[in-house]
Length: 192
Image (tube, rainbow, N blue to C red; front, side, top):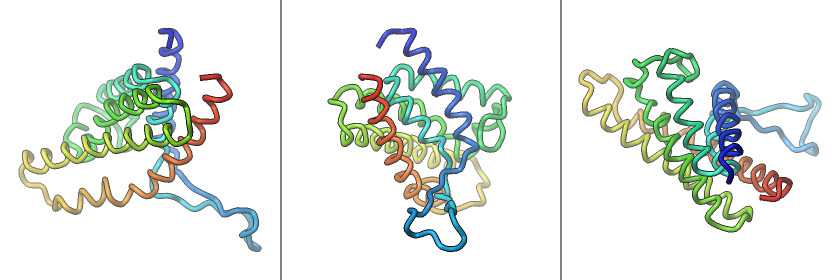
């Protein structure tokens, strides 16, 4: 992919990641299941942040995806309140910071796999799953080191693993499905 196009996708990825941080993912019931209350949205318990990370990987490739997430981390660590709980260098002490660190390799892996194989829905979904797995692997490693190295942690490690990896996973898998379908459609429309 040409460098200017990668740069455009990196900027798009940065903006989508920032916006996705504050946009909760939700689903609606199909039209046939509406009752007298009409259209209702049900929260998935996650935001579209991981979806933005994976979308830029599927559409912009590995370099654009990694660059957008590096820019996101730099913005957040330099006091721009783009993380879910603010920003600043002190954020590295947060248990969830490892998952943010995992965005860089996760986006790169997703972009690498997405452009390594044929552009089919299954392969794009697989690339998203690879990216999601990478984010969780890095996040869990950071979570364990954070627990072991910072004395006086009050929350048990198992509770933090459940909070940051297990409970959000079903909602994130639904977001992965939506992103895979969106990426597949956009890649067809853009002749990727």
